[in-house]
Image (cartoon, rainbow, N blue to C red; front, side, top):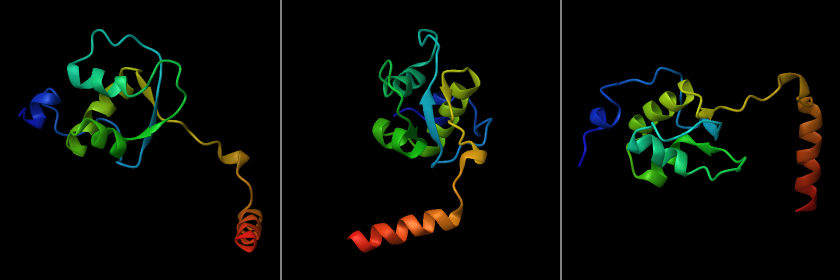
Length: 109
């Protein structure tokens, strides 16, 4: 068993605000100079995939403590290997429209 602080290079907190519910996607960058755990995280994102993963899902897949994965993901975001998708606030529909859609879906069920 390897201690979490060894896996993170001695870091005890992520440099960015990375929550367990945070979704990340793979960005560009070579993984050859990354550490073994960072390469394992990047291996969860197949080349050309556009899907995202939550930090909690990454921790579960790699069987690592979530706090450790948050630090590794933060490092990968700082290095440009991972990115967090941002939702455009201007393109959001009004809540009344969403409520009408939800009500219509409930009527169908």
